[in-house]
Image 1 (cartoon, one colour):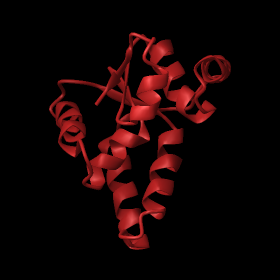
Image 2 (cartoon, rainbow, N blue to C red):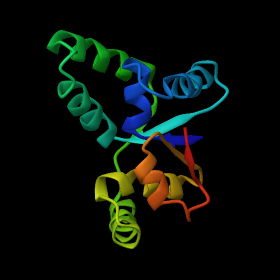
Image 3 (cartoon, rainbow, N blue to C red):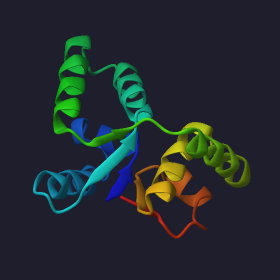
Length: 133
């Protein structure tokens, strides 16, 4: 299992740099090679990122969200212990609590966290389970 963040999921729908690598992760998931999970926060972050893209129409945002939900990734509501860990991680590594929730979730599941966010990767470089897309 891997935890993916919104920077990965966004690339599944909007072509950007490294979209191919993000799509590889999706294909592995679709073919049952890899399980993917994310905190419920991914839904809000994806919707917000799409909303701020001037090239995407509101009806397209709705379609993308429907498609994402239909993929049936494991969407997890973080527990209090995950949130507490996220706060500690955020303070220790100088990242937002939002970003740290993904990391704390991965740590709690004992799996890797994958992101396409270069700045986040640099800040979390000391954590061996954090990987670039």
